Length: 313
Length: 326
Image (cartoon, rainbow over all chains, first blue to last red; front, side, top):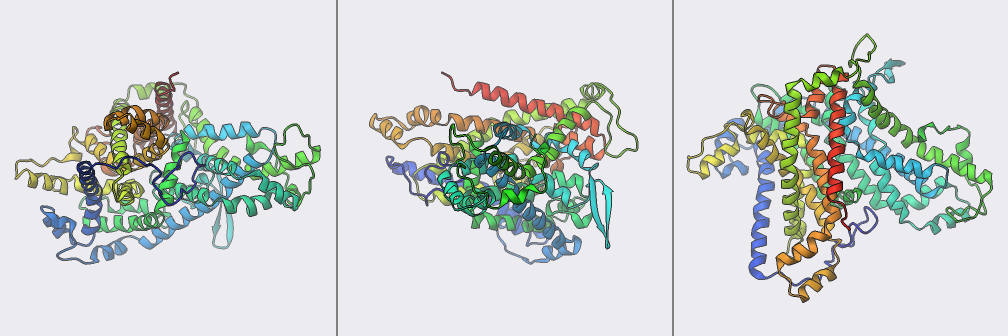
């Protein structure tokens, strides 16, 4: 875990050689540290464990088990009934496909558009380059919450083309579309900044060699710079994916039609007077597990991308 | 603006394919290139930067400018009539709206508690994980799990935990042998906001642990070795080596926690809807309620502007307070 932040953004550190030859921690201290660590594991894990375990139990048993440790154990009347209940109640598969499609497209288009812009900014020489770069970085200070409501008004005025049967229909307003959940989030100043920083660490001699061989700029972008930028691509992919998958406020406002909803907004189906908590926990588990699996699979990349977001300051 | 750069359609292929240039050394100081090569390079840059530029302009610059304009109009989300300028009416209405003051107060209280607690707790976690004891990777991963879990899921889960007959009350009754009287955490004006604070720290602290960790790892090892040679105690090591070494990290963490604390929305929307008695309403929640539910875009823009000014002010103050002292 050496040199996480002083290396170019998003660079994968070499597999964790502890570079610090510090005096070893004394024995009683190390016991104390371990105890603290384990207690904290319980603090962070128990609520989530409770969620997964409760999703397997009927409501009556969830409440009965709360008074003891059985609340955290999959024991008693365990079944997948709550999951079946969720599928009966909401078009879960549709929501899931929507979420996968929306976040997948945003990630892919985002990587392409932002890296291309960063390449143009870092590798080519043109008038106004510095001003554009400064302007892009300056926008990082604006939180999305500031512009969400004006943006809502604005997208409601934008022209839109929709497919109605076999006809293309021109309409006004992006409300209730897929594009309104994707297009505003493709270009991202922070992604451009991350790519820009990373590209600066790739030697320009490589470009020149390619130019000698007659390669054009796009060719250099595609065949020289991008293949060397794996870590930056992973970072941008993760930092784009998480907020889009977890987005709530924006889809809540722009999507009313059921068939266009992403999974997070689907949760609203369960907001009612008599909440079926077992089903809620099943739904919550189902939309959490995909991200958790991705996280556990690409742990190092996830953690590095978060760490590299600290370079922003 | 980038987006205004003309994109002549016929130009891309020329720029795309091989344009042999002898003198094409980017950033070669003093060397002047033929104008044609130069303008070709500009055109290539235009179509490369253009898409991102246009999108940023349309979905970031325009809405921000709109916020400044719409805040002084009576614009509605859906309305047959065009918006009219109404001067400062939105702001005067806001300043006489008790919900606005409640929101502002909740935002400030929430940030004042969350910023030190989450930053401090995050640092403790980072130090714990950074200590040379086995299993670092495992613990770091576990503490990070709530961060990748959606705040909507977390809010829903904790809403259940906080219920009158929920897990938290049951456990508290159990460990106090029945002496604890269950509290309806989210329906009590004096406990609702603190309950949301606890949950928010629980969810977000792993993020800042990682940032602190990255900062810790930039501190050169020889400083610690020198400290050990001088016989520095654990506290002295922290006070004179670790803490000064984290200066840049500190500024970043303070600013990001503050901004995310001020942006509080999802938790409120899922758990309390601003209640009970406006004890958990926030500026962003209020903006969404007026701009989306009540269709009052003008009013919502005014709230968004005030929110923006608040964020800018706090960030500027923090940057000033944590600046490098010479």
